[in-house]
Length: 494
Image 1 (cartoon, one colour):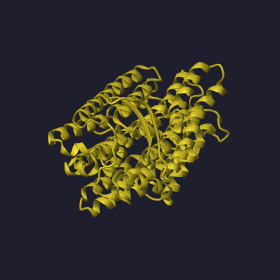
Image 2 (cartoon, one colour):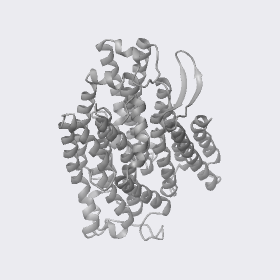
Image 3 (cartoon, one colour):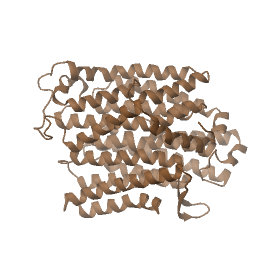
Image 4 (cartoon, helix red, strand yellow):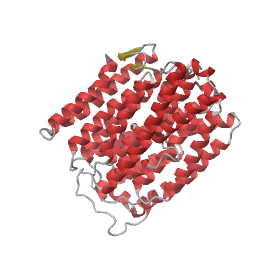
């Protein structure tokens, strides 16, 4: 019953939002918030039950070749907890950000429907269920990408659709081949046993197709171009794209393939883990360098996301349990830090009218809370203590050094130095340089905090920034969740 409610409630919310429309803003907002809040508490309940030996599954369709099934595992509740919690904050943030925007009904309906898509993906027990919701997520995000309805937005939407639907086609083809050679599409702890007897050609083809399919959503170079262009979407959607759903789903797809399709042992035996780590390393350096070249704050953050997603891939594809721990922790930590940065960017753009990095001089005098939170989480993205990013990156580097592969830790260190190069200038300017006349066009006292954003936008910013520091100083809570995830995926106790 819990899984059914988690999947269906956002659909009900979407229908009600469309029905209510502009008739009652209060009722519409309730239909936006309730599905996310209820889903979060249900996921938290499932997380408690699963970590204490409980088992939950849901069968909607059960045919030999087509089955829609869901299962709550340590991995699925780990992913769903962060998604639903951050979705609540994004809904609250949106109430302030979208106050004077057009097409609010469409915006909130699509935003809520995406909860169903994300939950369907993380709780899917087989590849066909995964694929259905994988594509639903792609389709449901499209109206949000083109929300501004400008020529630039439509171009970004076309690129988004072509890239991600191509990735979806690759996943579907891989699923069909997998079913043809093994007779199953179900995720299996330790991997599908029948794959071990397949030829190297078959395994390589499957690896290429899955890497292509999930590489588009995870922003691997050269499949990344849609991501910076999608920044034309409203900032809350940029936050959802980069921290909550779409790109994290790409990483989640790699996790499923490595641990529940191939199995970590076969994946490593074939040398696929090194290929992924090399692709990720190239992406890390490329995205970091491209971040230096950006003039707009959201595009800079987009390349930062591309960079950080590959950190996760380096961690989860490692043969070291320590590095794997770092990779899984970084899924949480990056989500918290990056959503804070996008929230801050949205507040800066809507309140000051400025989106350019070279025009942020003196901004901290007008928006001290926003810029302080931006600075805190930028420190974490770079990988410096005491913000949580340093914890996950330390684990990843420690694991690779221990297994005698120092090249990947050096990539992470080099990346941090480059990231410092594109985060430090706007922060230093905001706090220590004088304002250039004409840089800002502030709204009038909308929050009773001077030029800060309304409380519906400011509260989520402060909450996630505090969490980033808490997990950087006291990170044991995510550890409790990651350990059963790794045990379930690998059969090893960390």
